[in-house]
Image (tube, rainbow, N blue to C red; front, side, top):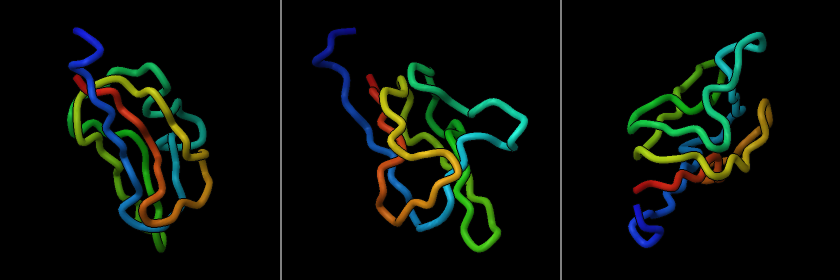
Length: 86
């Protein structure tokens, strides 16, 4: 696929909370940089007031950036993932 056909899709926090890249501390991260994901695939969890929300991919493609830190607080609108969709 030509580079011109690919677009960058940003995944931003829909609410403030704690960002978790893994389903539990003992398990591997849902995705890493370079992971190929499908639309609606779980990328991470966001905990707000003891409720965990799944962060799902809005598009299929490759994870090219993960600016959010695991187990760190994120605010509404913070960038969590960048996907190169194509």
